[in-house]
Length: 140
Image (cartoon, rainbow, N blue to C red):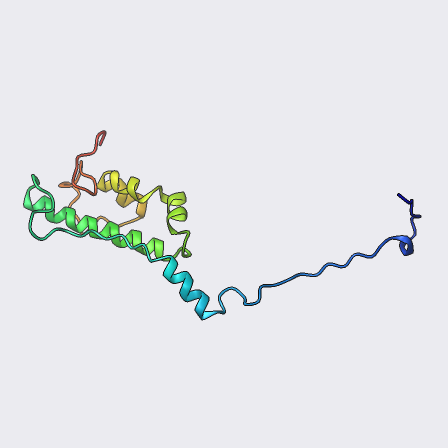
């Protein structure tokens, strides 16, 4: 290997070129449509079965309060997830709040506090030891 002197004229010149995509991200409607079809919206909804009671073994007033709480929780989760970019909704939600399943497994009061939901429209006395699915939570 040859030694070069310290003069700038003896050093080889290097040129850097940057290559961009043919179509910038977000400018192609066709590619956006393909991305949208590949990543369907992940809406979380409570779907009660019409033929049998949703929460067997619970008093009717507790079941109605639980349905109100479930709707508030689902609406808040969907509202939070709608602010996240497509394809990263579950990951970003779990970084901030934990997984959707863990939020629903916690008791109603803890889920409301975690998601920042006002408990005004729901009677928390009736839902003290219940989770999203109507099961009792240990340690509450």
